[in-house]
Image 1: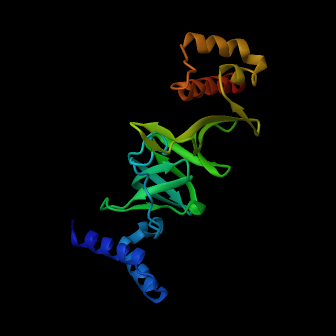
Image 2: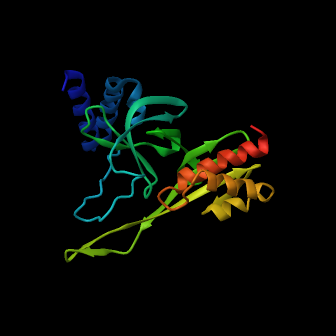
Image 3: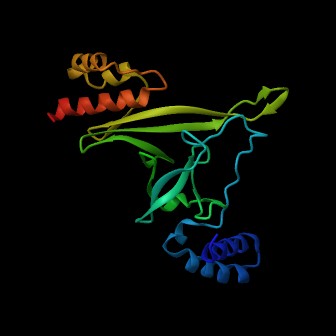
Length: 229
């Protein structure tokens, strides 16, 4: 660890631990100076992780591993970040450069963020993955996550997260929830036969595991039919 990173870590830990107000402000000012342009993302709120001793699963989007991404925060874009998104708390987590502290991002200032190959945009009180986007049509995916019933494993009781995936198609300024191929086709009565043929010819699989990819492909094709792309 170089001297700058060590200095940054010491300042952040001191800021999080010390309670008197008169000591916090100078420390935070010094921390922001050491962190540079990225200091805005590093709030004083440290993530409380989900211990595998108490939880049978996790509430993060796809994986609990940190992935490379970017954050548009208060109008400024921050790249080369390590991120994960908590669908239960609806909270974006960033890992500091020295990979020692996990910090919560102030979601009130997040315009959008990117994790891996997915862009996440605001949707109600959460963020949704933008699967398809054009001036005429869009498709997003979000996760409803809640604390479910406890489960028992090896005579030990664990807490469990229940996740429900939702897809929303935006068409002509109106949003529709789609859950399957049939619910999607109902939104395009004039092109139903063509869409069914496309799904069959391209072997689109609408089972839970592949539904996002199938609906994305069908949305793109529907957009091309309506707007003659």
